[in-house]
Image (tube, rainbow, N blue to C red; front, side):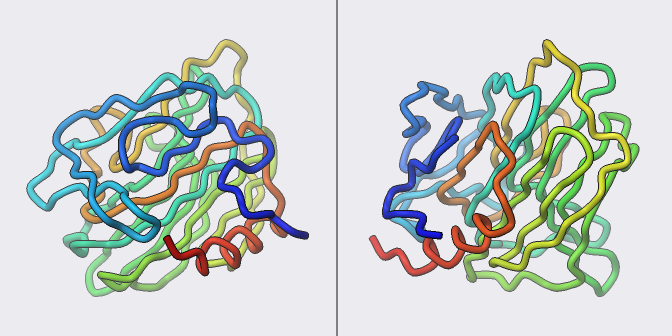
Length: 224
């Protein structure tokens, strides 16, 4: 399958080069920044960096996705998390009562580091999760993603390695008011990502495992 040479892939709901807070999808879902993220040269031109002194620095907006959802991004860890700390570079908040959070996370437990993709309710009840037991090296760019069917299946991706996970209870309620958060969880989460983020894409469809692999293969070689 050829992805073509455009960032604006079919089904794109919102897209951010993060040279600024603007949505390049044409859907005008621009971000509003909280705190002081820095826009500077990253992997693909400019991107955003959340400084080590940051607390709850994030960008968020009303998303409105109530069914399938895919989110992909490039991330670069600037500071390793402390023991027991989780950092969340990208999260989409889904549903209403209970609110569900579809997230990409990186955490430390003792001497071990884990890259997580998962969904949990606002009270932190885990609905599903997939964990790679590995340390993400600082200064290295990683392509991460999660593609949710809207009901029972989620695809989790790290550098083109795609795993399929069955959702325990992933159905969404209609009329949901959603948010995308870049650099942290939803306000009050306090799971600040310390590092750089570039090229965040959000779709209101579940992208396939083939697409996730091809997206990594294509975008990793793009030089700007």
